[in-house]
Image (cartoon, rainbow, N blue to C red; front, side, top):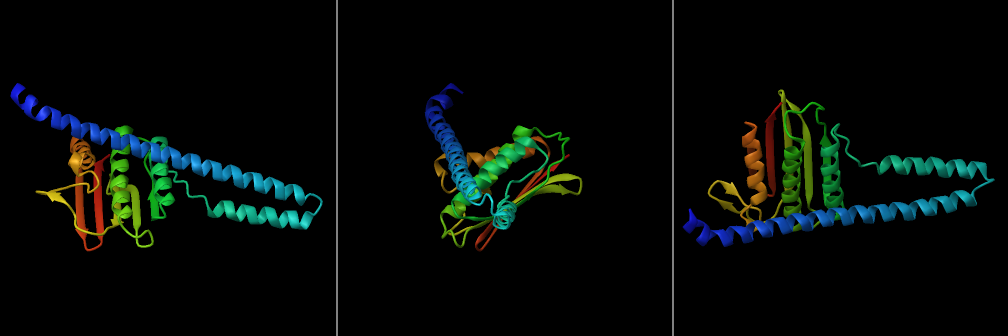
Length: 221
């Protein structure tokens, strides 16, 4: 065991460090994107206030502007509300970052309040699946890139489906898919998903066809 640690220990440590650094980088990207979005809202809010002040005394124009503003706010409400606060946080931060990269995304999610599955484990699964989908889309023309997300109940189990467009070849080691961007970490994110699903006696199915990669996860409730 000591010989194994001596020979392979430094290599494993480097790969784990690279994986952790990648996690931190992605988290910083997500937070930065949220800050940019908030600054945009602040700028828009300031402009709306100025316009409303200019319309004081002009009741019909003011009413029309408020109705138009209400329609705009309804249109841009892209916040996902799953019923679980932690899942809401991870989903919305990832989806916000994906949209900022001009990737077309469609997401529907509902999570039961009473979960036997650890919320942290569930967030790790969702986060890693979305990270891998986003990486695949970043290697394509944004106009052609898309991601579809669904989380819900299927036959009494929690069902998670993430599919995305892709270009190029899928990298595999045996039957294991590798994350292209993080080959040096040998798909640690995918391995974490597999281990968590296995812990709960769940099921993972990954499929790839020409131009599409899809992952399905079933977790017992």
